[in-house]
Length: 188
Image (cartoon, rainbow, N blue to C red):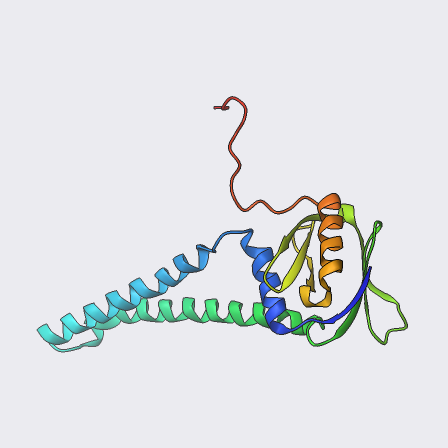
């Protein structure tokens, strides 16, 4: 089955989310933001207390100011990483380009429209570790853990979508989103 599509930024972000979260909300960024919030609140409280008691002096306010600067640096790193991640698809030339994808029993072949049919990427089904269906996109994760293919679901009509789901279910195991109960004895 062959489809043509143009990947949008929203579809790219959804595919990235499906790839990186592995089915659960990311708690890592929440902890990082706590590293920002706690020093800021502590610094503000300490500066307010120092100002109320004896007036602000450089000696009394250096520790809270250093905490405030550290929190600002962490916030800047988080926001920079988020910006880079959002623009990764555009930098790779995947967003707002028209692509043709051939999906068959042998694997997946993606080529840019206008490149004389030369494949930009070709994969066998064995190269994919898992897949995940989102609201707008199909994400196929490669075994290397660093790359994935994103195909918008709007590129498929209802019949092709059913054929695609059957093909993928035969060829790739789905991503687990819930821990499966153990069936054997526990190892200690």
